[in-house]
Amino acid sequence: MTRPETHRGACLCGGVVFEVDAPLRPVTTCHCTQCRKQSGHFWAATSVPHDRFRLIRDTGLRWFHASDSARRGHCGQCGAFLFWEPAGEARISFAAGALEGTTGLTIAERWFTEDGGDYDPEANAPPQGLPERLPASCLCGDCRFDLPAPAGPVTACHCLQCRVLSGHFSASFDADPNSLRWQSRLSERVFTTPGGASRGFCATCGSKLWFRAADGRFSVEAGVVDGPTGGRLARHIHVASMGDYYTIGDGLPQHAKDASDA
Image 1 (cartoon, rainbow, N blue to C red):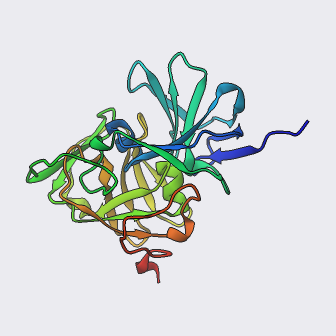
Image 2 (image 1 turned 135 degrees about the horizontal axis):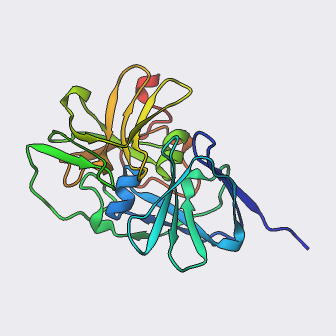
Image 3 (image 1 turned 135 degrees about the vertical axis):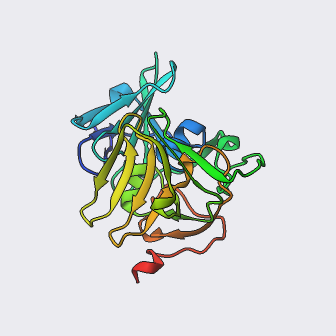
């Protein structure tokens, strides 16, 4: 008997590793508020029944119950948003961006685009007035801050780190870290990458908060802003590392890597 094809996935630090047996469901992207905050942009997931899913390592795994209908899994060590599991069903969804190597998948559906960010050309966010300062918070509310409006140009990053941590690809805008007014940093955690960059996230719910490059450049994840940002997606970077399950069709400038890395 031919053995099924197996796909392997992991968080960025290796604290969570899993395997799934094919076939995998086509990818669905979700722009709902919960997925937006946890991913920092929007989430992309595929799914299998429980009997085709195996946890190989779970030392970093943390579950957050955002509602009675499902729980959400992330790595409490690096912040990678990995799983969504509905209550009372024998299936689990997992981040397409966390899968290693070639997936052979494609995006089939886009959900809750009306809840997406105003900066996102793939969303259908209704027009809203822009406040003087942008309120931002994680999904559970343990981390809250505000910063000056508007957000300005938003950069989408498709590097491997951003894909694994967000579950798809990231979207962030530059900010002065001294301009952030924090109301709560109760569960803020910082993951330092091998290259010396720092990534802030909420350890309780896994929401992505901010990024500080090794050279000191600082940015805020666009999806963590509670309402309109006043920003607009402006470019894509590190597209040479993008996942095989999606394409970029918005006509914006694309760079094989970050133009500032040249």
